[in-house]
Image (tube, rainbow, N blue to C red; front, side, top):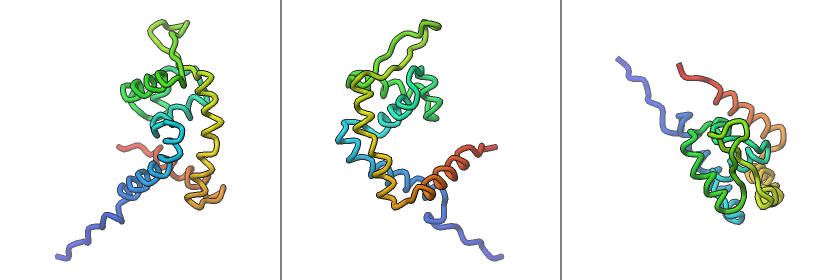
Length: 144
């Protein structure tokens, strides 16, 4: 009975996504180091620059992470002076995360990162939009 050929590592989608993700975070690293940020901290700030006043749960949901993994990042950003946490007036058990003046100022410094990454990847605007859309469709697929 003929044995089917097992795909090589380069033929596995999981490896292609994993290796690309590692390479992307390596490309971001020098730009984020200049801002004294880690990649996960940068992602939190991106969400807050889009919409601040979120709670940890909302922030974690937006980043598709567990709230327990977001809390230490938020605390570090707070200790660095980029955001503050305060009690929600409607629910004393919840904390609302707000950007500080320094956190808002960091946005201007970080504004060129996305363009720099697009340029490093040699992607046109339509190609980048298409790639982001395809990856979003893939993320939305649910496992049975």
